[in-house]
Length: 245
Image (cartoon, rainbow, N blue to C red; front, side, top):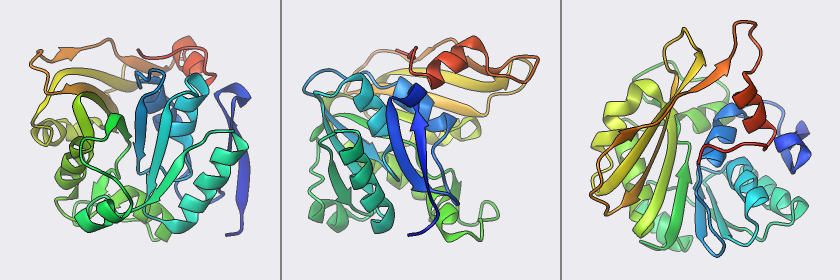
């Protein structure tokens, strides 16, 4: 692969090699990582890991957890492997199509094996919107028709009883997300707004497998102030100086 950039995340705490074009790590990855309640010794699976940004940012906070990065694109998986080495994270790279049971099994993704599963699923489904002509961007952003439900159910199947599941997705897909997560309780929802006067564009959802606790709505994240610059909270999250826990 050519046209690779070398980027720094969390104020330089994470080094990330990633393609110059196509899907690149940004605010969504930062917010998802900041929502992960990781503890020493946890098995953490980053689903749809791409080059590893989310898992590596979590590892910057808790290196003693055990990390598995799941990515179906072998070229991105190789970059993820390089990024783990550059950041001194002993992560296992699982090249797997999450939607295929045999592919998950071949990659060693066993049912109920994770303390935490994190995912930033592709936001679109075939037939719902125009898909990017860029193959890398299209693969990162689009699922087959009905794929979101299958993706979320596969993710939840990897979570141990009483383990945690954490998701970032488009705010307008909330109903589908909730309908696909049967068995997840104690759900905490947080909405992400581009500015205080704009509708939410993202949702952050976390919950505990097997919990019967009710759903709660947490304070929102406002990304930009009236001047168009990051709010102090958003800036602190991007610098690794704050979390959403």
